[in-house]
Length: 230
DNA sequence: GCGACAG
DNA sequence: ATCTTGTCGC
Image 1 (tube, helix red, strand yellow):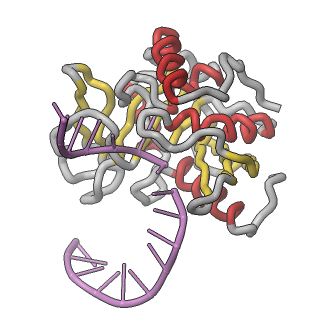
Image 2: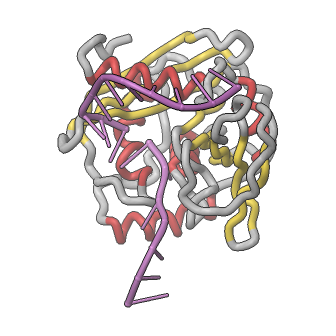
């Protein structure tokens, strides 16, 4: 069972959530990877509109072949509503439950959302990185904060996202002539490495494989097409 | 005060 | 995020 550090309670109000982010942000470390990763995990949650039940899942793949080597899913309940800037308080609790079911401890974890590309520099990828105490980064489909110049249309090109003069992430083209994805470091990794890993997880789609497979997993779970054991 | 606003 | 069919473009 993969474990994590329970740094704080998740049963908080929006105001307390912001205070926690302000308190935790100083612990985030943006730096090169300590070790070359061999495995990477993708995370996602799904739910039915107007319902409180959430389906969370994590898929672990080998970085060299992109082969799926483990999956874990859980059916839980969201303790927090979706509020821009506070996504982690809605998604991380159930993702931690799925994390506990893993037998493999992924070397790096990709999140569907942002890391430092956040108003307080602590998006879901950074926040989860502190709990998991391992490299994490975000790869979102849209912007929360920050401005950027449109990168060239070919796969691999990117341009920095800036917020109040700081580079907080990158708009990265993962496929020719399709909208970019937004990559930002979460914890224990740097932007350049997060970009390289995103490109390495290419499966021919705009969305990188870890996130894409996690998305498929949780949707299948929600539709009752599979159990949550595997 | 007004508009923006990850999933 | 979710609700949903067809349709425009490479």
